[in-house]
Image 1 (tube, helix red, strand yellow):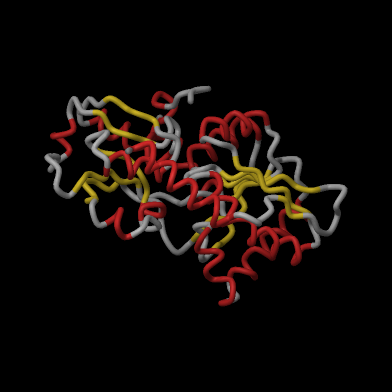
Image 2 (cartoon, rainbow, N blue to C red):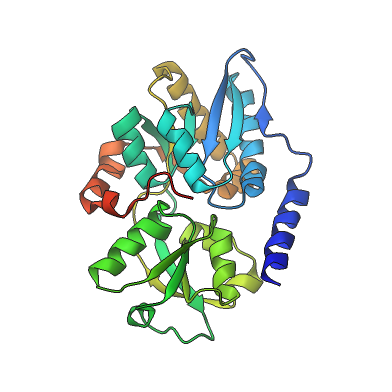
Length: 283
């Protein structure tokens, strides 16, 4: 039954995006810039959300963009570690590592809503407090999902709450694993939870919310020229201010994009010591 539910959900998303192309070919066709998206949701959902935005960005800038979505967050991390992506939409922890190891620079982030991690439980379940989670199994998208996993596990450890993590690849799978009672609770974020269908959210309850942080940035490799970066930032913000594009930019979690700044937005996260909770090369 559980496998059937996951399969049906994935099939629904696949049919919804059928016919969309992940490759945006416009402008300088000899130099398509790769754009990698961290797969918080099923990859097909990321393709569906980002394809029309990159198409408009391509038309506005005259540049070509090649959309890439890996099958899991660890797969995305492995590609990011090579420095292959020209542009990448990543979580704040990824931003810290990519800045340190490959000199990536954040270009844009949303200004409408800060990022909050959260633990969800079934409304009719037995878990009523964080203390009730001690000794329980919790689901997370991936070891290094920032607010949905790393930050939550660090905060639970600080309170001496011992849990067994189960990594289920996407935020959508987290919410369904809690719904199906495979685990006692699951880690997600406000942006993905609010995008779940009513019949999923109505059966779940938010048990805990982390302190807010700056949301996921769209970052650029050090190999991308300042001129191209400036063109992308300007066009991205201009497109987002057009009411006709509101739904498109909401779908990629950047309804009100603004220029990002590493020192202002992400540098303070370095002090959290999240590296000790990160897992390298794990699925």
